Structure formats: structure tokens, C-alpha cells
Image (cartoon, one colour):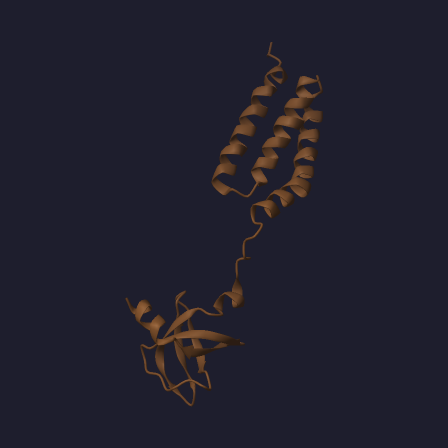
Length: 161
């Protein structure tokens, strides 16, 4: 005769919630925290009120989904309040430092950006001639090329270290 394992399902809910909390501590995005809350409040809560195992799963999933789409965005917004949004893709290139790797001929050359990428570059029309190895700064993105201008003298010495 097999024991009725549904009487020990509360242990599974607690272990699942603990696992979600541990993962949340590693990710810090409130996703697994919402899943842990759904496990404890929904799954364990329905168990304590005597609900069947399938109802525990349904309520835990529904509550976790509800928390993910309602509470999590509010928590993330509060966490990132006052922060400048992270620049990505092309927006992250503006103002980035670069070093000339190929000489400029007819105001076209090649630079290696500080992120390691090599780009075709145009020289800023107001810029003086530059040589290979000079430090530059991205001022515009022109499709698959960047427009660069020399760094001011005070920034050039601090970047070359």
C-alpha cells in the first residue's frame, strides 16, 4: 500500500518558493520573486485551506502571473526611478572614444571604438588632420559609418594613461 504523498505537498511548495528566492537573489529582476510569492500564497495557501493539488497549481500559476504583470512593473519602475536609461545599440556609440587605426584619406578612414569594434569613419569637417593612433570621439552615426572628432587636449592625456 502506497502512502498518500499529497499530504506532503506543502514541503514541495516551500522548497519551490525557496528555490525561486535563491534564483531571484542571483538575477535581481523581481521575476522569480513573483513566482515565489505565487507558490507560497497560491499553492501553500490553497493547501492550508484543504484544496486539491490541481487547484493549488492553478491558483499558484494564476497568482504568479497576476503578480508578474501588475506588481513587478511597479517595483522595477520604483527601483530605477531617477536613473538615466541605459543607452544601447547605436545610441551607445555617441560620445564613445575611439583610436584611429587607418589613415584618413579624403576625410574617410577607420577607427577602433573603445568597445573593440572597428568602424569606417568620416572626419568631422571642422577637425584638423589626424594621424594613426590619435584619440577621437564619435559625434554622429551615419548608417554604417561614424563621424569622429579629435578629443580636446585635456581628455587626450588622461585617456592615454
